[in-house]
Length: 612
Image (cartoon, rainbow, N blue to C red; front, top):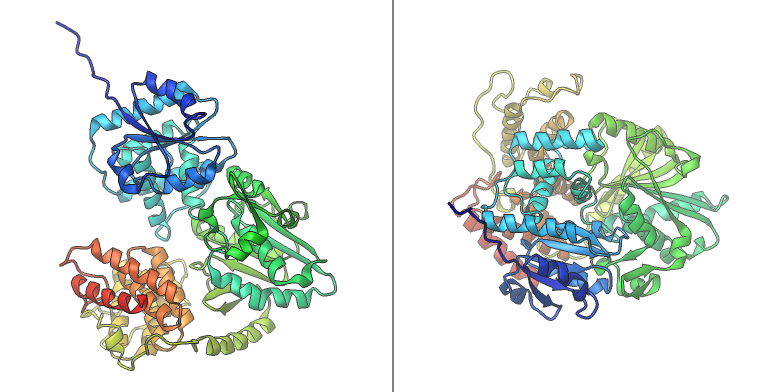
C-alpha cells in the first residue's frame, strides 16, 4: 500500500524592499520553501494589495523606514507580516507583526514561520470567538505571575482586545491554541514580550491628550517658574514613558513656550519597565505616525528628517535622560536615579494595570518624590479617589491634574476650581443651544424599578445601604447596584437631578468601576452646566466599555456644545460605527426610547451639520 503524502501548499508572499539589495537576500530561502515572490511598493493602492491575494508579507524595516511604515498601514489587517529589522527595537512600535527577523536572514527561523503559515492556510479555521471569562482569568493569572501586571474588570477589555489582535496576527485558530503558543514561545519568539508591549505601550504619540499640555502652558509651568525663581531649577519625571514621545513633548513645551528657562537647570527624566521602549526613546528617531499631533512649525524646529524618520534636535537630548525603573518596586524616591525633589510627575495610563493596594503604594511613593506643592498628572481617564487626601484636584480645559498639598492648599484649590469652572463652561462659540427640556436631549432612559425590600423605596434611596461608614472594601452585589442605578435614572428623568447625583456618588464610593454610574453622573453634570466634568465621566465610561454607544453619543454633544468640533466629529463617527455593527432590532443600553435605526438617522443628520 503506497504511503500517504501531503501536498505542500505554495504560498504567495508580497515582498516590500529594494529590488536590487533586499529581494536578492530574501529570495533564496523563499524559493527553497516553494513560495511565489511578488515584489510590491507604495505605488499599489490598498485595493490592489487586496487583489494580490498574498498569503503573507515580508517587509524590510531597515532602510528606508519611512516608506516601509507607510506601506504597512495600507496592508489588509488580516495579512501576516514578517519584518526584517536592524536590531534597534523599532519592531515594538507595531503590534501587527507576526515575526521579527534580523540580517543576515535566519533561513531556519524563516522556514519555521512559513511552515506555521502554511499549516494555518491548510486548516481554513473559522474566526475564533472572543475569550471566555475563564480564559481571560487564565491569561490574567499568567500575566500576574510573569510580570506583575494585573487585569480586572477595569481593564479586561484591554486584555481581550490585545489577545484577539495577536491571535489574528499569528493566525491562531482558538484562544486555547494561542495561550499554548504563548507558553511554548515565551522566550524563543518573544511572543509574550510582543503581547506585553501591545497591552502596556499601545498607541503612543507626541502631545497626547492636549488638555494636559494646555494646563501646563497656561497654569502649571508659569506657577513653577514663579515659585522656583531663586533656585532656577526644574525637575520633571515621566514615569512609564514608553518610547519617549511624552518626555520629548515635555521638553519641547518648556523650550518653545518659556524662553526665560534658557539658563535654568532643567532635567526631564523618563523611566519605563521595557528595555526595548527605552532603546527607542534614547535613539530619538520617530515615525510620522507618532508625530501626527506636532504642528508643522514645531516639527521643522525640533526635528530633522532622515531616511529612518524624524530625529529629535540635540538641544532636546541635552534636557532629557532615560532609565529603567519598575514602579512596583521600592527603588524610588531615590536621588541615585533622579526621582527625588520633583516639581512635576507625569504617570499616565500606567496604574490601570495595578491592583488597588499597589496603586496606593505607588501614589504614596510618587507623593514622596514630589516637592511640596508639586504636580501629578495621571491618564485622562484615571482618577485619585477619596483616600488620597494629600492631593488637591485641579481642572483646566477638560484636563484633570493633582497638586501635593495640605488643608490650606485644598481650600485655595476649591476656590480656584470654582472660578475656573465658571469661566471654562462659557464656550467661545456655540454650535447648538442647550434646551430646558431634559427629555429632548436625553431621551427617557428610566426603567421600571421593581420593589426591593430594604434597598429601594418608592421615592427615596436608603442612604445607609451604601454608607461611607461601612467597609469600603465591600462592593454591593451587581443586581443591587443596577437596581439603585435604575432608581437614579428614574429620579433624573423626573428632573430630581440632585437626588440622582447623590445616589451616583454613593455608588461610586463603593464601586468605582461602575460604568453606568459614571454615565448617569455625566448626564447630570452636563445638564447642570458642568461640561468639563461631564466629559471626564463619559471618557471613564468609554475606558471601561469601548462599545458604550450612548457615552460616545453624549460625549459628542458636549464637545459640540463647547466648541470642540474635531472631537465632536470623532465621537459621532465612533457612535455611527458602533451602531452600524448592531442589528436593527438590537437594544441600546441606557437608551430606552432610541432604536438603532432611529439613532443612526439622528447621528447622520448631526454629522452633516458638523461637516458643513
